[in-house]
Amino acid sequence: MVFLMLGLTLALYGNGAPLANAQSEAVVVDDFQGDEDDTYPNQWVFVTSNQEVLDIETQMRENEWARVQRENGRAYLRTYTQNEAMRISMLNDEHFNWDLQEHPWFEWKWRIQSYPEGAAENNRRRNDTAAAMYVTFGSDWLGRPKSIKYTFSSSLPVGTTDEQGPLRVMVIDSANEPGLGQWKTMRRNIRSDYRQLFGENPPNNPISITIWNDSDTISGQTSKADFDAIRLLPPQ
Image (tube, rainbow, N blue to C red; front, side, top):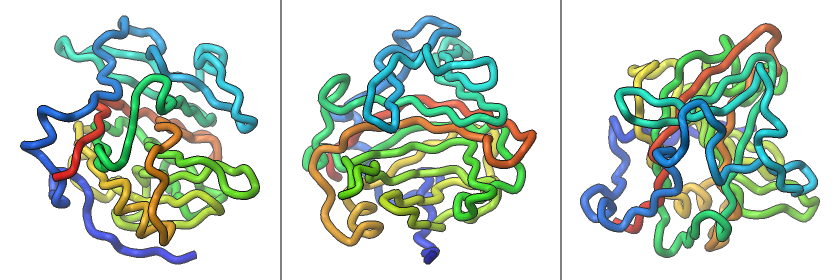
């Protein structure tokens, strides 16, 4: 496995992402403002390995859940796992429309509250993630989801990448970075990242966006992370 240092991607440090032009043309995927407190977020679903789409309520348990919370009048999504893995997805063309020609930039906020100690995305025995965002583009020839996983890592440095079959992992935030426990804005150029990670141009329409939280590999661990302001931005 090859690990490449790509440079910091947090908006805190800057990565050449659009700002002024994006404000009036951004597409809001979800900001959770329309959801009731302590409920599961509307429009998000659970997609099984067989591509069956289920209500996320059927998958939530006491030790794995995603619920809308509110703080100072602002709604956000809180995710939590204890020795479990949780994912929820929003499907392109059903709940939003994503054309990479028009909106190549993907932006969201997250806040890491707790994370699995010693976890590392490049080690199958320690592959836990307090927070990740997947962008899925379809399937490979074996029917496996072809995705980029933008992840917070408990131990790996920002810029680390890993190849796991049709999945490409990119560490964009880490416990080694400042601001742990604070809201951070993450912003990525999907077309650029796809070319770098897969060596070819991406399909123009991603299939889905997935929020991820898991602590099911290292025994006795928990993860808690908040998400908000998920947007698609136009070219600079």
